[in-house]
Amino acid sequence: MDLAYFLQQLINGVTLGSVYGLIAIGYTMVYGIIGMINFAHGDIFMVGAFIALISFILFALTSIALPIVLLLTLLIAMVFTACYGWTVEKLAYKPLRKSFRLAPLISALGMSIVLQNYVQAAQGARIKTLQPVIQGGFTFLEDTGFTVSLSYLQIFIILVTIFLMAVFTLLITRTALGRAQRACEQDRTMTALMGINVDRTISITFIIGSSLASVAGMMFVMYYGVIDFYIGFLAGIKAFTAAVLGGIGSIPGAMLGGLLIGLIEVFWSGYISIEYKDIAAFTVLVVVLIFYPTGFLGKPDIEKV
Amino acid sequence: MLLISKVETFYGNIQALRGVDVKVNSGEIVTLIGSNGAGKSTLLMTISGVNKASTGEILFDDQRIENLLPHEIVNLGISQVPEGRRIFSRLSVEDNLRLGASAYEKGKNFDTDAKDVYDLFPVLKDRLNQRGGTLSGGEQQMLAIGRAMMARPKMLLLDEPSLGIAPKLVNQIFVAIKNINKEKKVTIFLVEQNAKKALELADRGYVLVNGNVTLEGTGQDLLKNKDIQAAYLEGGGKK
Image (cartoon, rainbow over all chains, first blue to last red; front, side, top):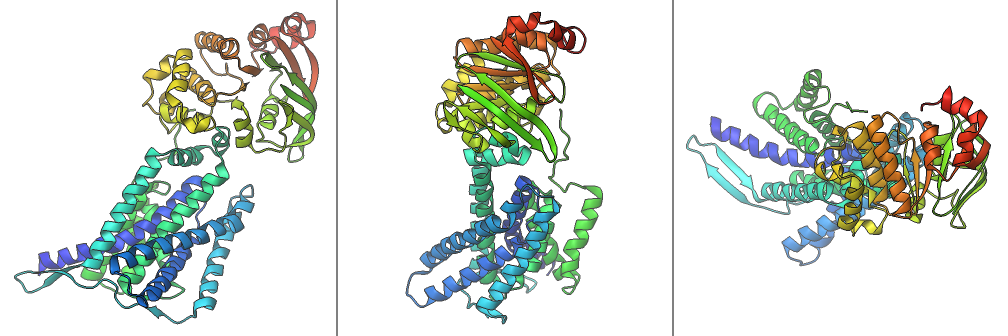
């Protein structure tokens, strides 16, 4: 059963890692550009999951074909969640931009509580379930008798993640917007002196981060089939851990970190103990930070002046 | 072209500018000299909208700009090369130049504009793919000026372009500033501690002491002025 079991864990880990990676990008981008940890980002992910759920339920009443439902839900979740992310930035962070460093952090914690309570009040505190949207998959029967399965849903999640990360990488490295974002990361005043609207660039960063988180939310609700208003907390902390593990501020680092956290969690559950799977991810973080204080792909801030 | 009147700027409770009046006419090179802490950089940052003037007004082409945001001011045609160059050290030289072009038609004419910059500073063309932080001090200064020129400004604010740069390169940079003024018809407002070089280059000059303009005149007059010679040319300032 060894190889088959390992393969199965690998598939599950990559799937989960995709979800964490998509959330982690939002943490790392916001940290890169305004140097704050957006603690409400996990809750933005949760809002995205709820919007996707509502969208799926509404489309279930119609007879629209599945691929179109998936595409429309993806777009709806991205657009609406982006509005939430944009609003949070405008309300809670922008007024504090010239304040002391801790102020937006406290504001972010407040926003996190606001979003949780808002969803709890609007949707109720009980768990919400979703019938499987994509069913079936491939199974490979290994000769030892253990079945390895790769569901269509897992393929969908991994492909969408790869696609979004590719598009997103191109956006950052090849477009004027990405260049402006990288410039803001280094020197916001100087970026403004280039004639670039820094506030707008920051807003767009929140919009991108939120829409990626909403895709993660959509995948989460499809994969687990169960959500409540509190899922953003643990998923958010793990994605944040992923961002730190990869090197906060580094976008490839966030993707790598997400993948690692997903794999660690799944392998720990599979081989050691499912009860302590949450501890595993954080333990690895502690150990890694001892040896790589800036994370795997983080850059130490040494600059020639 | 630029008319600054009675501008006062504060950092918290500390008053950095105490009612500054400066006028720069179209096509001129005007310099502002003064010692460390006199408020020179503050004045440039106030023109660019990074620091807000608490009182007074700043007119650019007869339009009030003291309440505009920095990027709006750049889009009106005032670019700044700030003290310490502040190039984007982790980005490539090309990305630095492309960022500079953000204000001018969103960089659509990048190639032609970049060619003008390479004419001024040929070394930049060979360094396009290098990270900004790997350039020497003088090359970084050239990049900073080139980056500002990519916005096709009507007016260029320069803050201590000679600071920390090898003397040979200082001459090259001052020649370039003169070229920018004469050939590209860009009005120059130059802040310098290197008073002698600045006054030799400038049509007119102002002296800033503790946030006040104490003297003004043509470059030649100021060079001959006894007080300036004593304070900035022989004893205090760098030659």
